Length: 527
Ligand code: D5M
Ligand code: FE
Ligand code: ZN
Image: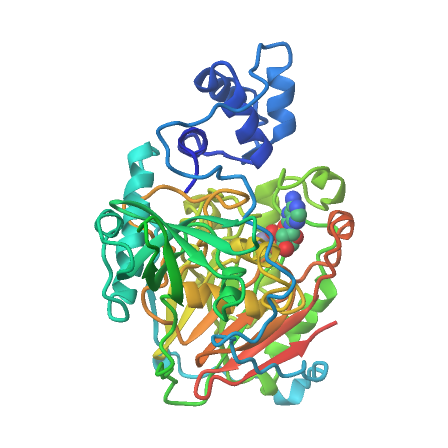
């Protein structure tokens, strides 16, 4: 879990409507008067900024006396929230017992030209059914106090531990500390630290509401292959034997909350389809307007007759001030004008479509997750087709098929932390499998992820969805994990100079189409 100073800074900024990058938080934490520095940073922030950057804080603190090293946080038992987890060993390859099964169809052929003689015939809207659950909008109780972090982590622990209790007969950390050496013990805890020992074994420190306990995973055991997929703050269970001095648990088994293998997805009662897209990025010079228009035209054809739902998983617009020098690549510099332009593009799709949209990190909504739906002003601008606007994440049920919509900000960190074979930009669905396995859309706190303190952890995947839809990484990928259909939906933005600099090669102009009666997926290409 993150250090208290960082949490405070993040919550203080969130309470003022800002997020900050890692460097900014570090600099503010190191300021001689962090509270004052936060005030000054917010005051001096540009009007249109959603995020306080390290550069901004550096400029501000210039001339002010600043402690060169971040203070230790003696009250916190946590590890440095910004330290990276131990590097997984090379021997840790894919193919562990829980390796997700994947099926990936190749993208289908290009669009069929619009045949004006055989257009889309609007279906009977009475047949449609949409329910929305798990949306933070209007429910936010977070006051930005430190206590809210304690509450949200406790809620996460309780709810995920509930999924593990059936599999282990767990004892709290403080009870395990009192058990005699050599006893068998089982514990459910949040991953607090992962270290490699001098001899190459793994020390995984688990934390529950009573304390922490170190669990040793021997490097030559089969379960050692699971250590490289652990991330900080996820909840797991372990089974093992206490060492003679009872100070450490020799771990034999690791359990994840996971999706039960018996999971049976629900399907619709009729042949009806949903198009799942994300990352439109209107307002960027690289917005792929032609591909978008081809997609919209195709939706008007008879071939797209059964596509009655359109789900958009965030990043409607390019936004402003999202990354360095972004303004040089904007075609529309005003955020509201970006939404107006997006609304015009949305009008190109058939008016009878049922549209559901959640925000992403480029949208004009608080960056910390869970993100509430677009506000009233943006709703007014995007009123075309009477779209339903809900929070990130949300569970949207379409004729009985539940779709967990999540923009996907945590995917970058999953891909960075997990070995290539277990998650990569080329196979973003594999990173999604791990989120399903951890039953949390953004398990790791700190780093790049901003998590808003709330009374409840809205990011826990309570119910197993039938379909999991994310975007954000701008890569197309889909497959199945324990019969959940995971889909990451490409983007509508050509490679930006910024993406080029960080080696992101986007999949532009694809629309994955899901048959809601079979859950089959076909990706259509519109470039
Ligand atoms: O994200 C598009 C992709 O670009 C996604 O994988 C994250 C990556 N990205 C975005 N910002 C950064 C920074 N600052 N560093 C590295 N990678 C980044 P999007 O949300 O559309 O910008
Ligand atoms: Fe995006
Ligand atoms: Zn994004």
